[in-house]
Image (tube, rainbow, N blue to C red; front, side, top):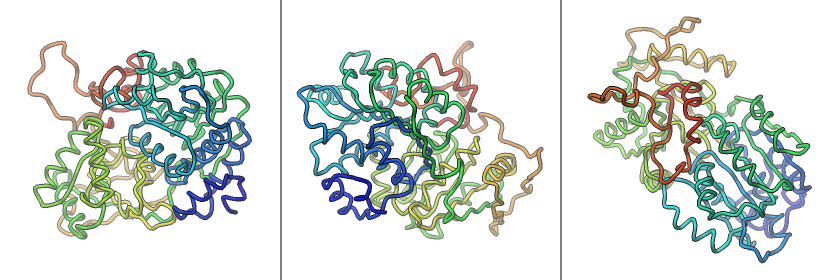
Length: 444
């Protein structure tokens, strides 16, 4: 099957050919015809399957076929859970639509609203936004959503996990009833189906990969180690090929910063990306990593989805995630498009329970091997009583707090990110529910 057989316009085919894309991926082959027909779509696709093109290509064709309009109102809205994913979608739209007269802009927190307002006043066809910052613009009346013809929710399950449901409902209420709606998610879990039924009209369903599956080209390794020796073992693993691009996952923002300081002192070129970083700092760190100026990117789970890094050879879990499903999203950054990848996890005795959950989720065993010189004093356990990290144990402890102050672990999930909702934070009324859902130690 070719892209031409899907009915795409010559201008899109030309752009795809220049980027070396010859055949559609399974999700693209299934989704593009449905979207071109104008119907609602509920699509399940794991990260790295090419789902952005699955909605971007038919969206661009729809907007170009409709022709230019006299209004400055946006005609399509793409909602994403994170700033990085919003920027990536915008880049893809520009690449695919380079021979079309379709304009787009991003709206997310962590940066000033001024330039965003100016872009909206000039007029754009597509807005790619995080829910919180979009609501900021709605409150400022700098954005008119009455002309939206197509709504796309990208990584819908992640938006629900992050507590954006109230914000999503508020945005949906402001959109025209007559529109095409596309929802892309890694799973068709109950909450996703319930959300879809509230605002979609007889959606078609397509699914290309079972939930929580990983690429067969990724090999998994577990190295047991005492918690106090984890940093030294990480340095040992990285030193085996100091030029190799490596994505390292830390459970907490503070832990990510400490790792970067440690690696920098050892001569490694490392940078951190997490919710407390400004948007400029996050963008610069990711750019430096992609271009090779930085070889080690230390991230919290904010980078587990939506970060497109070509040919990333290895992902290292310095800390195992508190939620087993996040392991799948983390290692989805490697082994993409048929390339070989490696997932290495440094696991201490108190993370045995988390490792057991991951094995159960993957329905496969993971090779466990000691690294000479770093053998743990306590072996890992795989039984039902395997220990787990104490919630919040890796959080930094303040020296003292006045009575009645904010309790440990109750910081905002993604730090302060500008005005209002700040782009990556859920609505105020939903924060307590979010804390109950996900342990404080797992927040990005």
